[in-house]
Image 1 (cartoon, rainbow, N blue to C red):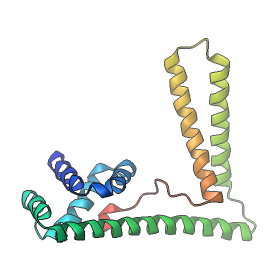
Image 2 (image 1 turned 45 degrees about the horizontal axis):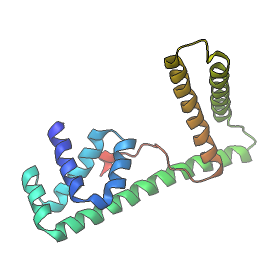
Image 3 (image 1 turned 60 degrees about the horizontal axis):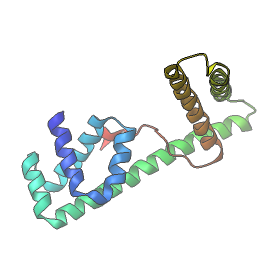
Image 4 (image 1 turned 90 degrees about the vertical axis):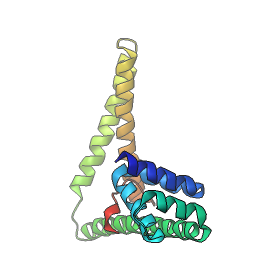
Length: 173
């Protein structure tokens, strides 16, 4: 796995203009699937499976490098469209349930639980700040942040565009 990641990092270093794309992919998905996707794209463009030869071809052929750049941008667009479609399907489901008079109890319970968890964490910190060690406060603050992120995701889903960590199958290419 380490040699594959090293090769992918070398490929990424050849395309610094796409660093945001790569960092987003690596932050949202496991390194193995992202590495495999980038390696597969690069192999198909360079026409070789040999990692050293692949990198040499990219370094020495500007057209190949530009083709790789374009393919990665297209792949990013496909991923974003897949995420948007997934979000739209979920919203359509919610709308269909609402028009039939069915309440989405699961979503309501999740939002209520996240709200309650956040409030309890904040109350705990406010009440016990002087009586407990800072490490415990740090842990409870982290948990409060997680509950806050859950609420942010719920609000983003209900009221606006949000593209979060919905899984995209990187192995489907």
